[in-house]
Length: 284
Image (cartoon, rainbow, N blue to C red; front, side, top):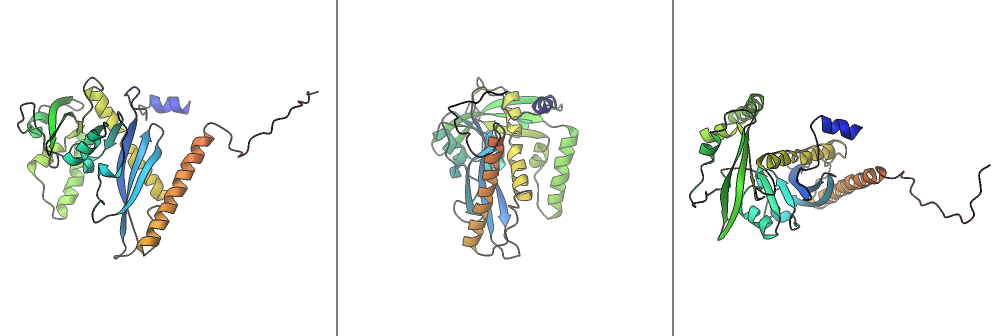
């Protein structure tokens, strides 16, 4: 009954891509207390619709191999990987494609140059300008280049509601107060959700791609739970080695809790098997 009500409210964690495995990737930062405390980044992968963690890696926030990159994970052929704009760059997308997986990332037009079918630079600003109504969606075939590699894909975009646009622009105005600059094109892109995917059109429609990408928010909610319930964001250690041990311990507890919850969904968790009784006693 609860699952039925959940679906009636318009929310489902089952991607509308029949038979395709889907993963969600993201990273979050945890800090030691104090102005000189070290920072760590947890690179995390979830499976949909079970929300089970299948991979994670702990790195510092600075130095080689610390940024949000697809290189922290291994992919299976045919699976779809959902990720945020931090993963939107040619080399990362090429790494996923080389492992015969598919990718769907929030588009960062400044980090991912796109080319049209003629090999000319693709103007994202001109393309989305035609989306004038809230909920209006469209897609365009594009190409991504990484070295000598040419990767075919498409950009799927949808215009936000006025309320969502205003909310995004309020956040940007807060950043402007800190002295950051913003281009006119960035201001224009606040009106849309744009994603790049290597899924072919016959595998998923524009709407299916956009609806599937919305499920990426589940990893953000997972981080909130880890930091609130498991106290993952509280790091009372001052040395790298002890900080790493503390964080791995917290993640182990969180993963054990996930396993217990998963087992409890199907059986009563009393913890031992029933002995076989060769001679059954009839009931009176």
